[in-house]
Every structure is written in C-alpha cells, then in structure tokens.
Image (cartoon, rainbow, N blue to C red):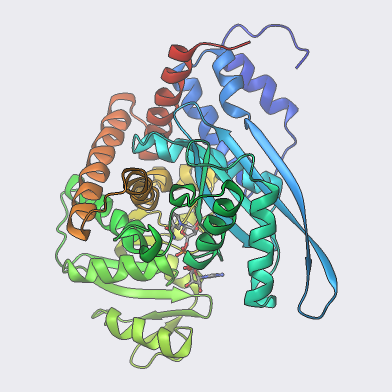
Length: 437
Ligand code: NAD
C-alpha cells in the first residue's frame, strides 16, 4: 500500500476498509475481517503486525486433470491456503464443493489460525478446497481428484508444514487417499500428514465425535456462567451430520432435552423432547430426517427462532443474519458450524442479551483431537478413548474460561474476546520471532 505511514492501527484499519470493496454481509472473508479489525483495534495491535496477520502467507491454485469414468478428460480447480504458520504447521480441512472460492478458503484458513490459537495448539491455520460437486462423481473419480490434488500441492504438505483434515464433503476415506499419495511420494509411510484418518491407519479414537463433544463441553460451561441448569435445558440443533447429530446425542445423554433437529430436508420439533438415537437410526435408513414420525415438521428458518435454552447452528455459514437475528429466542447459541452468524447479526444478538459461544471456540474440539492424532502418530503410541475425551474436556474448559476472562476484562462479547485472545497469542509469537528479511 503506497499510503502515508499509519500512526496507529485505527488509521490503518480505516485505510484498509476504505480500500476493500463494499462486500455483502455474508461474504466470509469480510465476516472474518470485521471481527479481526474490532479485536485488533481493542488490542491496539502494532500497525506492522496488523498488516502481517491479515494477509495469508501462501495461496496455491492448481489444475486437477482427471479422466472421468466415461473416458472424457475433465479439469478441476484445487486451492490450498496457509494463512499463518508462526505457531506451527498449518492445520485445516479440505472441502469438496461447487461453492469453493479463493476468498472463502482465505477466510476459512484465517479462522483456523484463530481457532488453533484459542485452544492454544501448536498449529497455524490453513484450508483447502476443490471446486466440484462430489455427489455427481463416482468413488473412483473422487479418488483420482484427491490423489492429483495431493501431488499438485505436495510441496506445501507435511507433518511439519501443513496437515489437512476432513471438512465439508470429505471424510476418513479421502484422508486415507491423501496419506497414501503423500507416503508414495516420500517413499515411506507418513501417517501424521493428515488427521481424521481411519483408526486402523493411525487415526485417533474419539476424533469422529470430538467436535460435538467440544460443543457439549463449552455449552455446559456457558450454562454454568448463566447460572442455568444442564439437566432439562432445552436445545434446538440445525444440521444433523457429524457435528449436529453427535452434539444432539451427547447433550441428550447429559439429560438435556433436544426439542428440535433439522437437516437439508427440513426439521422436526417435539416440545417433550426427541429420541435422538431413534432419529439417528431413521437417518441411517432414510438418509434424511424427512418423514420422521411422531414430531411436528418445522422449516430450517423456524427452527432458528424456536424458544429454547440453547440453539446449535451446526450446518452452514450465514444462517443467522441481520434479517432474522431479532427473532432468535434462544438464551445461548453454541456455534457448531463455522461462520453461522454474520457480523451484523452479532450486534443484534448482543443487544438482545444472547450469549454466543463463538465458532472458533465452540467447534474447536475437532481440531483439538486432530492435534492429539498428530501427536499420537508422531509418537507412535496411541491413547484409549477415555484419555482422549478427558484431555479434550480439559483443553476446552480452559479455553472457555480464558475467553470468558478476556471478554469480561475488556467488556466485549465472547466472540471478540476469543479473537482478542487468539490475535494476542499469534502476535506474541511474531514479536518473539522477529522479522526475517
Ligand atoms: P456434515 O456434512 O456431516 O453435516 C452437515 C449437515 O447439515 C447435514 O445434516 C446436512 O443435511 C445439513 N445441511 C446441509 N444443508 C443444509 C441446509 N441448507 N439447511 C439445513 N441443514 C443443512 O458436516 P459436519 O462435519 O457436521 O459440519 C457441519 C459444520 O460444522 C460445517 O460448517 C463445518 O465446517 C463445521 N465444522 C465441522 C467440524 C467437524 O469435525 N466435522 C469441525 C469444526 C467445524
């Protein structure tokens, strides 16, 4: 930027915002930057560090040519971004989706930097994506895409540099292909290059449930803070995939009353509480919640505005916006999904006294057990599930208390408290390491 030297971070943030195009409320990068700017301003971050921390370190866009089952050649586009690796290797998922863009991957990579710092893991933030519709591809085609993508970005990958994990539309099987492709290139087995692998090949026990378990732990902390009871607390959950269904199951096991759940097909509601095990069985058999007997149908929009103690958005980004935030009647929101609430909605929820456990804290259980998996792979010594779950609980409770203390000290929301804690931790490492130039 050829502007005059900014005196402080406030001036720099203003210059930067004036230069950035006026984007939509739902733009993920803008959503991340608004919280980042707010926290940086309150921390009075040095202008130089502000410039370093807002910019992704490395962005790679690759072509992925594969031969389709039909014999036709198709070329897909893959992206990998490392936002910040000052605290350790880049860590972040890989998503297969038609909506993947560089802007989105940049935002998700930055979120990973802040998330890893909130739970104090020795990782930086990264993210990857392939622009494709995985539902329109065969397993053989997905394997080709995964392997070609891995070999195209292989110079970025490695247990000490960048460690992918599953995200939207990728799973244990995709991680196994990445691990195998990377290992073939390196001429020896390298389990620690990805996390979220099958347990048989170096995955961790408890990883599959970790994000939902983290949501449960942080929700219990929030209920305690609000002096509300865990037993009997009513819960509505949007999304019934890995995060949503695990959170629902674990919360029910704790004596909470899950009154509504939903998925892509719509939602179901029962004021006396749903039988979550039965819902899980139903989805196993019928793919979606649609048609589930003995409950009232609700839309996904209606679910978000049901009166309840805890609302868990665990599906998509941007579901709570300035348009519906005023209608939310939950007392606590636990953000299982990444970016379910826009920055404009934050202000409305805050004004209405709704306690938000922000995504970079609430759903950090997944990356925490990914870290455990990486540690176990590198040590070649595996822990039992009880040990994994207990260590996860300790880390999540500590992170919750640290974020709560930050938010109380600066009289800010839990979200801005979490960003302040994270930025401070990453900035501290930059100050210690100094500038290599
Ligand atoms: P998933 O694919 O297992 O499940 C997604 C669920 O959302 C499904 O039930 C799907 O039907 C539902 N859904 C999709 N479109 C919807 C719509 N328009 N309205 C309502 N529901 C819809 O995904 P997941 O792993 O559970 O991830 C969910 C969210 O949590 C994502 O934002 C993801 O980035 C985030 N997250 C996941 C993890 C993890 O470990 N899996 C960790 C951190 C954050």
